[in-house]
Length: 432
Image (cartoon, rainbow, N blue to C red):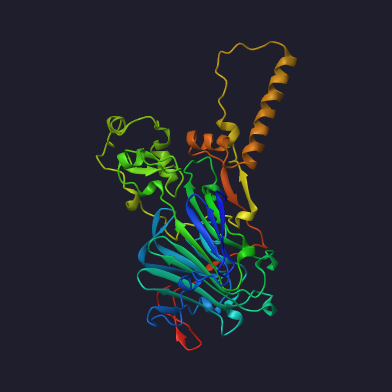
């Protein structure tokens, strides 16, 4: 999920190297110290309009807490328009709709995710700015929990209304590679995922909600230094196409397909994947024309039309994902009771001639078990392989679940309640 073409350009004027990487959904550019571009990327919160800058009193006085913020504009993230984000004390912004305990797992914008504790110093703050075209979160003079002697960190993430994302680093006292990830994940980059809710009564309630991370951008943390920056420029996605003609004629690398019943263009891998599969959009032939798709469409019995991409209701914060931790501890598991990969294998038809030899029967049974075990092992280690996706497409309510298991040494986050607190003479706005 991480990679693509890599190009390095050397600027002879100041010997700064700009590293550009194509990540399918974004193109990232890393700017080193001394590059002239840095001056335009860093947002000076002190020089900004004070009415637009807010110091979050709660986050500035707590550890491992997160707070939801409503943006003044729609922010495009992996092609989805979002109006709500969640700021965490640990150096990242959670971009998911469903708030759960382990926000570090996926669906994040992380300039520098680590075990920061803003409550350690009165000079440490978590502040944000929203001027209608850009939303900036700055972790200012924050210290690592238990490693306060290493010095304070100052960095920010800027979310532009165009979808562009900029990470700015002002003070990085130690190499990021030296920061311990024992008690909290340490990483920088982007991630998005989709959630699947399994309604089957055969699946336990605790395992009905699962998250599947379909893409992640991991930055080289050795490039994060004092006075450096990373700029993410969004690439076109299938979701931007609003008609069948533009969708099927798209030259994007995502292999866009048009679903007439949803009136949506998609590659099948975005936050609406469950709906895409439930309406049978993934089974439509790529060779079909727009006329063929329209002729094969029949309206729902009640005459209602499925909502378009922007009208799909999002999950509320009352939904929680059970047993989530970080992606570093993910494992591909199967549902209990035959709901896993093995149960999706085609069964033998009745009436097939049966060998009478006991030995032959035993050999066949052993071979079948071995095939199922090997298939499970392969899919377990290759969750995005063609075999795993084969079962996802054909058994959307019984596909292998990506579970995030909870461990005591991993970071847990709690959502703070809206309130007003003071720190260093500033009062945080009531909106959280």
